[in-house]
Every structure is written in C-alpha cells, then in structure tokens.
Image (cartoon, rainbow, N blue to C red; front, top):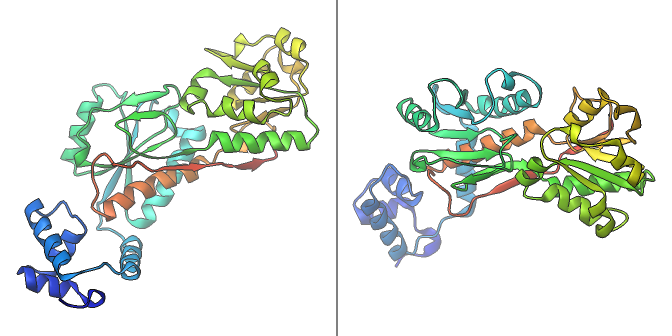
Amino acid sequence: MPDPKHVTLTQIAKAAGLSIGTVSLALRDSPLLLEETKRAVRAMAEKLGYRRNPRISALMAHIRRAKKVHQGERLALVWLEETQEETRRGLFAEYVNGAKARAEPLGYALEQYWVNTPGLSPARLERILIARGIVGVIFAPMLHAAAFELPWDFSNFAAAVIGNASCRPDLHRAGFNHYVAGRALLQRMVQRGHSRPVAVFSREADQRARGAMSATFLANHPAGPAEAARRIFFVEHTPGELTSRWFARLKPDSLVTHTDYYLAWQKSELGPKLPPTYLIDARPDGPPCPGIAQGEAVIAASAVDLVIGQLLHNERGVPNDPQALLFAGHWRES
C-alpha cells in the first residue's frame, strides 16, 4: 500500500479508472456526479490510504474564493414582508448596501425579490428562481413576524437568513447578538452612574430575538433580576401604550428602548418626561442618543459569505448543522 502521506489524486484516478477531475469532484461531494461514482472514488481513496492535505485544501479554497465567478452569476435577496418602497430607505437600505458590497467584488450580481408583490407568492418565486438559474438565496430580515416557514425544495438552493427570526427549515443565518450587546449597553450605563434603568421593548422584537433582549436586562441590571423584572415594559402594539404613570411610579434615572419608540414619544406629551435614553438599535440617521449600532451592513455581508461559501463547496439543501454568525454591534455615542 502506498505511503498515506504521498497518495495523490492521480494515483486514485489511475486505480479507479477515472479522470483526475472526476476524482476531485467526488472527494468534494459534488452534486454533478452520481452517488455511485462518488462512493466508488471514496472507497478507492480509503483503500489506498488517501488523506486530504489541510494546507493544500485551504490554499485551493482561498484561490476559489479570490477568483471571480463567470459573468452572470446571481444571488437573490428575498424580502418576505417589506414592500419595495420600504426597502429603499433607512436600515433596509443598509442591508442591501452591505449585501451588494460583499457580493459584487466577488463577481455576483444581487437581485431583489419582494414576495408581497402582486401576483407573486413564495411558491411562484421558487419556480422563478429555478427557471432563472439562481441558486444562492439570502432571506432578508423579518422586522414584524417572529418566525416564518418556507415549504421550498431547498435541494435546489444554497441559502442563508439575515436576522434572528425562527425559520423552518432551519438555515444558516447571520444576525445581531442581542444578549451580548445588551450587556455591554448596561455596563456603559452603570459606568455613567445609572443605577435605576428601565427598559421598554417590543414584545414581538423580543420574541424574534428568542428572549435575549429581556434576558440580558434581567441578568445584568444593577439592582438584580427581581427588581429588573419590575422595571421592564413590553409594548404589544404601539408605543402609545406606555404612560407617564409608569415612569412616575418607578422613578428611573435612565431608559433603554428602540429608536422608533423614542421618536414617537418625542412627538407626544411623554417626550419631555423621558430620562436619559439609550438605544438598542442606534442609527446614523436616528436621534442624538447613545446606544448600540447593530451593524446591518456587516450582518448582511456575512449572510452573503455563508451563501457563497456553500456555492464554492457545491453544497445545497438544508444543512445538518446550521451555522449562526451573531454580531454584537458597536457603541455609538450619538
């Protein structure tokens, strides 16, 4: 038997009676080959004692990543909730810009699709993408629903999700780490002398984050979890549900909340009564409050990386072990 350190693809190809290219594809589990052929190659490689050289594998992966794909390769960015008009502004535009900035230098064009377009449905969109030869799909973040389900045949696609909404089937995702970011935010507030913070969160947003927003407030509040539980308010529908009596009863010295809620309160009688406010989703075009910028562009770019990585490794379908890349954002003073 040849020395395992020196078994080459050429030796395997000669022993199996196949081309070197076929052997290479088989060992990378390419969908271009029949399962029978791949099994035969793997069996011969095992018989000869072949071992993959990790340094060469890493080098080839680097070369494939650096090489632009052929002109015309496209990725789909699919919006399941938002309208085309909504996605042209604010944080929606940040997601689009981040995805394009990652995809285009690598030779991939980004095409957007809006499921709520008249005449379009998830099932029809699946057929359209297959007909157009689009294999890579990024699902845009859900900003209303906490979960979604797509009865697609994912064996046709390499896919990833932006955001933390639950997805069926479970796919790779890139999202915001609400727990770590919330902990950092509370630590900053304590360093600035705040000892009685309150939090006002969207119930829906907390559910979408799988309870991480409320969990980090309860676990890291300077007065402890029992007191923190009294000092958290969940908005079920609109920020108008919050009353000034709640603030008067708790006498907070600071507030943690969403940008949109703060903007809504500034237009109401509650505005002048708000304590120093910290935002869990600070934005460049938002109010002059300190807080955590979630980094929408970075998250979207990472979702593109997840999809392109699958494409380069000839991977399709629902992953056995879905990856979750979570980012803690960064501090924005105002």
